[in-house]
Amino acid sequence: MKMRINKLLDRAPIPGGAGELLFYQRDQDYTIEVAGATGELMTTAHHGSEDALADLALQRLRHPEQAHVVIGGLGMGFTLAAVLRKVGDKGKVIVAELVPQVVTWNQGPMGERAGMPLSDPRTIVHLGDVLELIRSGKESYDAILLDTDNGPEGLTQPRNNRLYSHRGLRSAYVALRPGGVLAVWSTHPHPPFTRRLGMAGFHVEEQKVFAHGNKGTKHHLWFAVRPN
Image 1: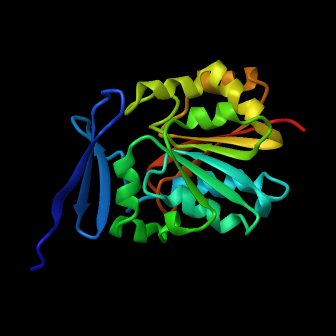
Image 2 (image 1 turned 90 degrees about the vertical axis):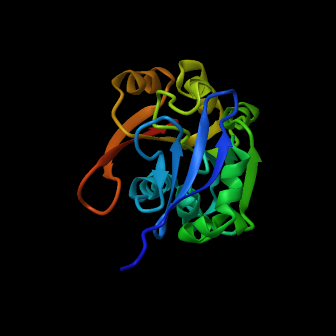
């Protein structure tokens, strides 16, 4: 009988005193959890909605192969890998991650699950707040993809709420080129957030996608386009 693996590999403090991330190997997969919270924050076993966040966002661009993309939250690298499959040699992808250990975990065996996207020469890692990148850009980006938490309500990092406020959304609007798209991942719908996107000037679409395969849990995605 094969022995099951359930091993804590590492732990990392979340900046701002917002708790701790726990990094596990569970058989052939890896998970990241928040200490004291119920369930997994993310797992290599299920990443269909993370792939869809990138695929469906870049489908909305006129020239995805040349896109300059910002990703908020490295996670397990699947959204980054999906973006890299869409952009060409002229594309550029900046991924912002607050927790340095998450970058380290993606550089090890876990990163192989997504194809080691951090080793791609088009990838630029920004260790810090994605809002800093957004506020530093003016019509600089074709797409901004946010998968920083469980959605518009911060779980691991209450400061993430600033991203989803009216002021944060206006910063994203200014940072995007006309026709650019802000894509946001969430575990659940959030009607007040949908209204805030519209009030910030975006044309908004919402879509539910499966977390894995074509059955089971669904996650919620927003695609907010800055008009031309």
